[in-house]
Length: 409
Image (cartoon, rainbow, N blue to C red; front, side, top):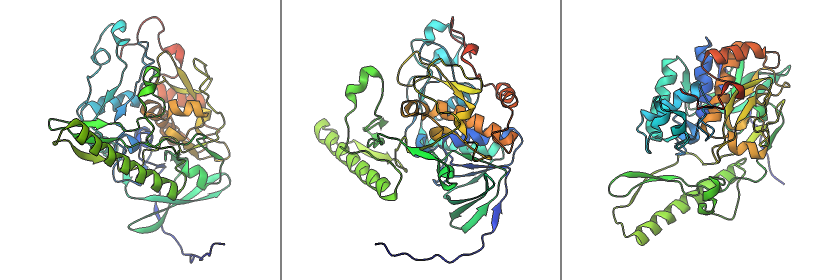
């Protein structure tokens, strides 16, 4: 039986009172913050790391996966396209898809998907500057510890950093934590990824001529023709829901990187090969998601929803197009909190599709826009939200994307 201690109660100062609190500064949180600020809200973004971008930057998963369906049709627009083009300023690390960046006929767009690999740390700095330009207040190295709720609303969040423990009071809250932390702290239903995460250890190395990204462990599902190239790094899966589990993931990841560097030095005979950068956070893809008003399923390809807030393709294969219903972003039992990114309400199959950058930005833009428009997400007029999203450049319906010729930017 464990022993316990009682923490003495103490009053917390309300240190911040923004209109919108964004919990998590990954790609979804960045998109939500930009959208909320551009819609007139005061925005505070709280991030536990020391840079924005999450897995894409601190996690070194520097792949801006496709904004298209693989058949020459763009499906993600708005801030999703804005941030892809911003990432190009960091120095693209693979051939830029010029067919998508220029007025090129649709047939050319079928040959290369609308994606790019970027410099993660440079991209993080560019994202930070974009947020500051929109007057978003950033709070780094800060963890959210508790949610104080009343009448189906989050009244305060409790956070902690080097300044101590304090409270934040906002009108609306966006859960872009990647693991549905706000919903869990508020006692709302969340679920974990049933299969668990495989071990990954992406890192950068210098081969004597240039710096390269080594996607060690890659992802469990890649392109159908390349699945045989994925070599598991460990005979174990990780939930990412406990400190011990995350620590084990990091320790095994670090060991796998060391072993890989040593093996490649010895077998490749390249004495100039040197490790340059490892991830500053665990490369866990799917941890927890909410149980929302609707659960989007992998089988719902080409399904049209009356409340779609945008679309995504499937990064793993061509020809798939999904509308994302607004109801997958919230649970009406928590009136002033909405989710974005890797913790929206999806089944396990759809989780692997919706966790990557483009759909994370699409849901982030929708969540941030909604957070600036209303204080009750269940009663927010969908027509009002849709009108605002479309005015921002987002396309919401599959019917808006041409099936006859590729959509030109």
